[in-house]
Image (cartoon, rainbow, N blue to C red; front, side, top):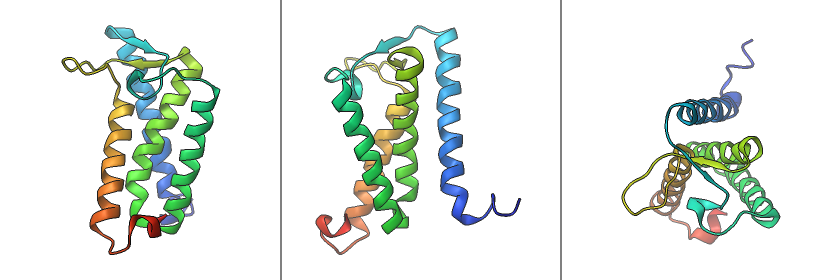
Length: 139
């Protein structure tokens, strides 16, 4: 039991909790509110196809490699991976991503997109602000 709560497993546990949270939110919102089924990619930009899924999986793999080398990026990578995996699950379960947040003229999006965007902002900020190395040395 103590192994589950060791520091080594916290990122995986947090990632699983985040994915479950996002899936529960999507399920509840879809039952109670008007939603949009997005068959596109990020914010509905471009159509999703086999290559965009492969590219997403490649980016996730790169993020996990970066996290292994630089643990200070763990929080940002959990946000990005949680949002991305949640969106992939929605694509499998619902045939597209369920979007439900509408802000003015901006494309409709969901909470997973907010986590992905926030994680990217934190990752990039952390990479540039906390390191004296050039961005190429970080990866």
